[in-house]
Length: 140
Image (cartoon, rainbow, N blue to C red):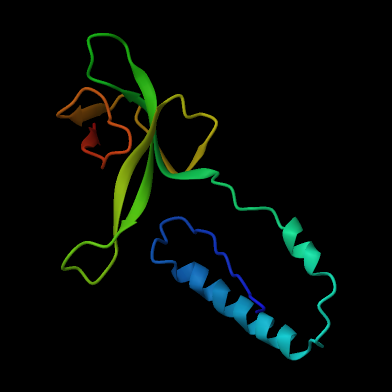
């Protein structure tokens, strides 16, 4: 069974994928046009295996230079990724921010980055908890 796979990327602050859907539509048009012009020859299918897999290169949000409320000097980065969650009773998907990494996150980029130099980390806990919903705020 022949299969066509469309994989889309991400535009900053476009979690409903409006921009991505635009390009899916264009790609679908050209794919259907190409299919209508094809013959039944299947040579060269091996090239599909040469397509590189998508790599995660960005977090949705990175708080840079966060000073934690500790007795010792502790400045770090906090990386956040939104997860698509279908919540009971809601017709729309919710995008909940989860802490993915805390510490030196300089090797990764964020679609949005916030410099927290001189700002306060406000939380019921002293440290951000990995793989948990963001439960802190950053305030002036």
